[in-house]
Image 1 (cartoon, rainbow, N blue to C red):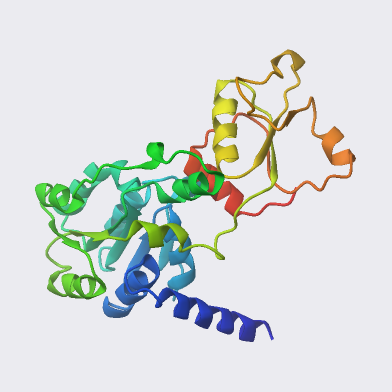
Image 2 (image 1 turned 45 degrees about the vertical axis):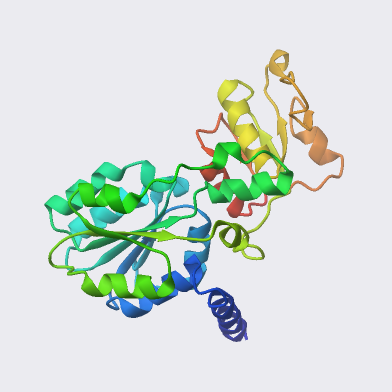
Length: 296
């Protein structure tokens, strides 16, 4: 019976992705349909990544890849280029957001010099959108998550790529038809409507309201605890050195305890993750940890 439920879920998702013809779901389905069947997709991190993990069909190992290192933002571009270097006979599509593409854009020059069969599809809505979701949900300011309106098509052209800006499903379908995978790398900037993009993962991506214990109470631990809190978590810091259990300015921590046993022993259900050292995560990696839906 399980496969029946899976098939029904996939049909419902496909119908949802096709509801709006210019969001990542329909764009990725269309790209997989009109590009060669052996095309490899490498997804960066972001809301479009969650959609891509549900929309794209993997036909063999490494057909659909993610950015390594706990969904480290921006890593998809060098990972995709590395995959294309290793198997240049397979066309590669790197899907990255307009936040992640800023991390390692210069690696595109490697693809140009080696004439790699690679397309970079930049999903651009002008925000760090998966972080913006939490800011909107919690009523926080959105100023820190606004991105400048950079035309990445022009940046890629300056690096020697064929590149263009696409703003519709029809334009996306037309653009790769003129791409010669044997000749050069290409970049396409897909401009997505930001407000619809903001809500497209509702009901798919889990909104965390769990309790997180973060053992790091120094500057690093506090910074990343704030990241978790901004994503909707209740954060509690503990440290064996009780003198460090102090609240920073404002109402930051829901509580501070010398060990997590007291809270768990009180009958409260603990649903979340335990981080045993100051976490070296930025906010997108914190989101990836929460997506694991861990039960400790």
